Length: 290
Image 1 (cartoon, rainbow, N blue to C red):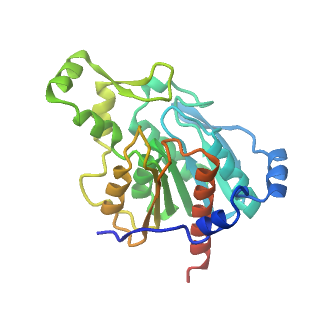
Image 2: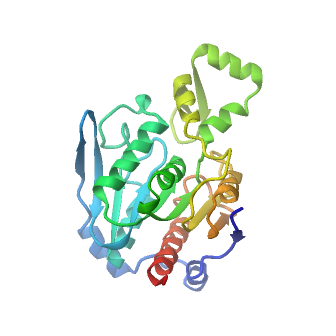
Image 3: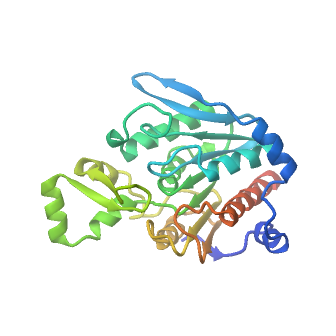
């Protein structure tokens, strides 16, 4: 079983306590980086929708950001990571899944398998060398699937409110009669605060396909360093999912960081600081390993 520790990020939290209110990246870097923001590009794939992405070239290990369901590559966390990676000279890639953001395709037609293929494509075609995968919500599930499929491309994982198996787990937690009614109806809704309607709507076909990609029923064959950040006030994805991930991955280097006031999106300034410092710590660890 993976060793799990609740710890303070080696440099991150100590700096945050010492320099409360100071941005994660020095202001002179941020001002320069905003002037040199990466441009949107499009990756063509035979018989598949084009994927929109932004890329910064740099040294290894690179960082790849995987957004959440219905989100895109222009969120606060994704933007902050580009500024951070540029300031250190490390490569960075952020992109939109099929049906998300500026990428082609329809969100309602996507599946977990569709978005897994998107992640594997960008890893294979748009990155060089080992990468630190940073997955937010659904992206936390997809980073696990990608790490299993491409261990040689995965240097480390950072999950933020990781939603491993979440669609399936939530549906299976419903009363039997409710599930039968939804199956007869052919669609179901997942409550959320992140849409005007207050729900995400899914077909039963989406759920059945997602079941093929569940990872929490058995040991997860991932051996790289894993960091899992989760807010205790997350009302969308329970924090204990990150605990389950930590218990099942085979890596001996697994840390869980729980934010007492953290919510699902983890996009407040101090949340982003913690994410950046966690990745900084991993880069230092990976580049000094003998």
